[in-house]
Image 1 (cartoon, one colour):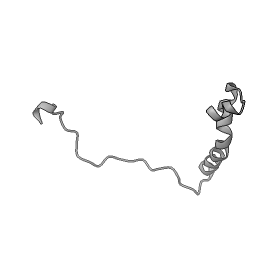
Image 2 (cartoon, rainbow, N blue to C red; image 1 turned 90 degrees about the vertical axis):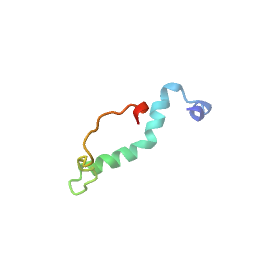
Image 3 (cartoon, one colour; image 1 turned 90 degrees about the horizontal axis):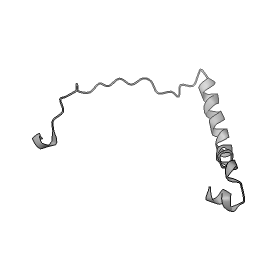
Length: 61
């Protein structure tokens, strides 16, 4: 924001100026999500560790 302010852009334009460079990346991600052949989503993870344990206060550890 400091550079935009120094260049004379009004504060109301800052969100637009931050978003414009990111639009190409957003569109690329959207296009990948629409492609059924590309699997970029992480599969659901299932915890396989030890069962839950009772809490032990610091004074008893």
